[in-house]
Image (cartoon, rainbow, N blue to C red; front, side):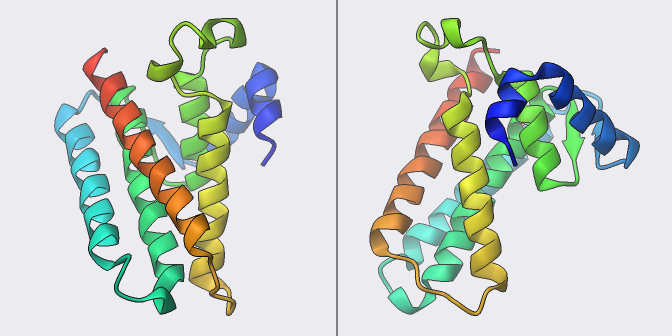
Amino acid sequence: MNIDKLFTDKKYLQEQIDFFINQKRIKKIKSNPELVQSHIKKAKHNLEFYKLNKDKSKEFADWLIVTLYYSLYHVSLALITNRNFMSKNHYGTILILIKEYSIPKEDIKLIENLALNKDDANFYNTLKEERHNASYSTYSKFSQELIESYEKGVIDFIIKTEEILENE
């Protein structure tokens, strides 16, 4: 996935979104604040499970990655649901996040804490790839440092999402 191109080429971004709409993987939905909050609750639930298990066994580090990813994914679904979208595809979710929540580079410094930027999209994509590796690869070694950096990123993303939702 070329995150840079998605941020800089709006035509390309829209073509990607249109593809997923035509495939019925993304669709517009009615406003549903309860579903937004349900996704936030599920994200926090997954994060709590991660916290309960992170120190118990380094042997299951791959599942810690999976848990962190799904916490991030549910908070992302909360954001797109807040803008009246539903996604049945992880890449489609990223596309809607970029379209609906990105801001011009020159404005990023002004509202950096309340908008999603390219770093957030890259973090989402990286953790998505790690989740895939953790779920399907026979290799299951993830460093504690890597897991902790993902934990911090997920917590920061949840906080940022809650701030965005409070300000809309």
